[in-house]
Image (spheres, rainbow, N blue to C red):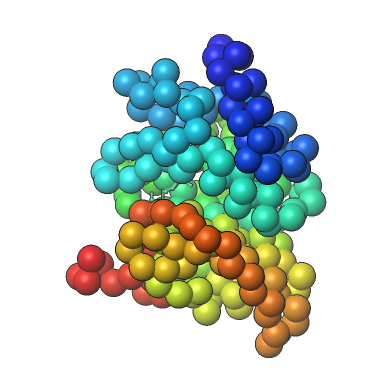
Length: 214
Ligand code: SAM
């Protein structure tokens, strides 16, 4: 289903600089139309973010591809995603052979994604809670991907990275963010680069935006 639309999307991602064959293969295989609401299905392979209800979105395919590529993960790596949303990003990581842990702070969204992933037979450990403090029980992670915009890089997430691991997170104000890529060199040393210009829904939590200020 949607074969031609998917091929066109992959060509577009290549043109925009996505080169990692594992990422491109996963995006060509995971059925994005199953992760968007019924009335949006015919837009599923356009390179745009789409509403998934409760004021949240499934990220633009280019953003998913760019962030996933930036993680530079090998198959079988352990990855934490903060912001499960539709479950699509988690499904991409699973298709690439990763062990995926994902946290969502909105109960209705968490519950829908958890049921959908189970129905599709995609194995993700999904938790309802505040992902800004990570998931201590399963740390350290080889990669951490945050799919909502934060005012800063949460300390807990840096702490829960493995040595050599990367954290990819949008950091900025409410309307626009830079994508920050943090690499853990050793317990106390991190390298950081940032890439403009992205726009995400806010990361709300103890080490993110405070809900009352939004
Ligand atoms: N990765 C998702 C996908 O593939 O559909 C897109 C996620 S959407 C852009 C961002 C999500 O982050 C929203 O569902 C939002 O509720 C969630 N979120 C915001 N703050 C959070 C937090 N502190 N912990 C966990 N999830 C959070």
